[in-house]
Length: 74
Image 1 (cartoon, rainbow, N blue to C red):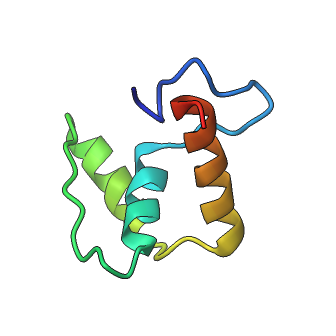
Image 2: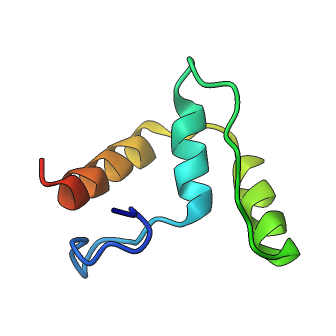
């Protein structure tokens, strides 16, 4: 199930973007690379702009984990 498209995310929660997902995984010190799969050059530009923001702050990581709990039923 996709974090970006899931119907399990409550309406009061912000829906993560692909860029959020890339930043989240790259926040893990054990991860050096995330491969994107954009369909258009505009998507590629948006993904690169998001990754350029750097690792997520603690509150962003908590938000992504909360979204994962909704989606994966934890």
